[in-house]
Image (cartoon, rainbow, N blue to C red; front, top):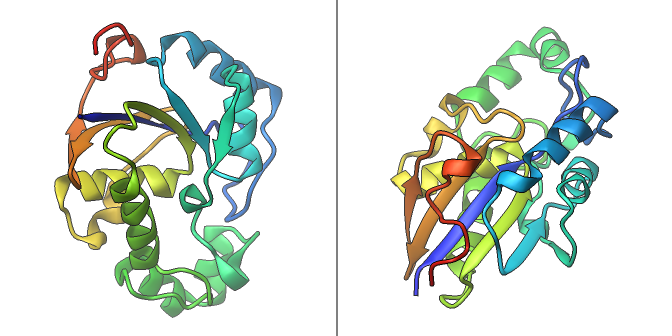
Length: 197
């Protein structure tokens, strides 16, 4: 049986500087998430990463019976949590550059990109074959890893994948093999409308 997986990148607060931290969504971001609700495909099980922004996005989508999935959490930023990329580039450019260029580097004491790739790939491969249609609100890093996993791309590709807030990654798979599905809009989702088997 084929698993049909939709990963929706969480909404993001508008007009704020980027920080390596969980952030509460503002009303504009919540409105954008509510607007996307009707255009997502049906799902038999729904997950959300444990962050505030992922849960607020799931609630704005009108999802109920959502399972918190710790494997879908954001990168553990260790001592860099709460800081901006600009601060890090100024404070220690060598460490920041190493983290952006070497997937095994974790100068902040948290997770490396390679660690996140392994964690998310393990979750994808552990989904049961009879999972059917699965949807999850995830962090941007998780959506990036899903694309890397489907394409069997190297972890160095992580920073070359742009995943805007409320964008979707569609995957189909079975037996540990994942395929990336492309579409032009949620309404044209290649994972179907929930009517076919």
